[in-house]
Length: 422
Image (cartoon, rainbow, N blue to C red):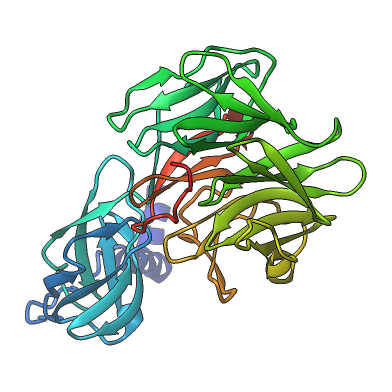
């Protein structure tokens, strides 16, 4: 047997088998060997030069998500898309670009800080610019830390800068609250039940007046005591939503009469004399500006703003169409309130995704701060004595969470038109 094995191992076939096995092992070993990968790093590469920020205009600062700033410097790209401007970690919107100048709409920065760290990156440059600190104030801030069960509604300021606001608690108890410029809030009137809430508050000759729950009574509101019925308008079906004063001491008020013809009521405050002016539509908002009464109305699923001239005798002329919301924004727009800035631009509180709409006297409309506000209806307005517009945002429903309506101060950087009576 040993002789047969020895003879076989010496045969050519066995030698060929050993050579084949050895060759496969070499191939496998060679194939598994680690290959050398060429480096992507080029020690001689320099890239584009580092961008440099030399100045930012306006130097005084701006408003988060709103202000368009100009960054002057060096080594930017004239190709818009090759530049990135970061406000903290959020990119701004670049509108114009050149090697020495970038025009950028500021990004939103998180609440809690009024300072943004601005950096510029240019495609192909190995480094960001150095950081430039820039003041960016929040576009709007909560007025007061209301509790979850508290819902603010109508607002008004006195000539000392105190804010008066109708507050409903637990859907049951109402009172008028007074908020000082220092942020101290106190009760201006005693609690009253019944789920009452005011749709409008206005000062006239040191006293506060208002309408609530679409009732026809004018309520006179004095500090420390319950509101008193000053005067009732129309018949039992009359429902008043809004009112305003002119410079001659007349109140104009309207809403929906419920049945029959609609009217705008004029009240001479000195003697409570009432006059009526026929008006064909349900009224949702009113404001006196430049000897005209502006009126926001709803007609079926349409929304419009009319104006009526106020003559020397405080009478109202024929209504003229000022702006047609339906023609610009489509059907089912709701006008909740209107006001004016000192330049005559009308601001409308609506249910649009960008809820506050600005309309010039020539009829040009645009959203105030597009994309900045939460996309929930704006309900009430009041301008303070400075350059801030206050508004109440409606209740927010997020899934199963209900966030009650809240009041905010908007930095408009422009004064409001006069509120006669303050």
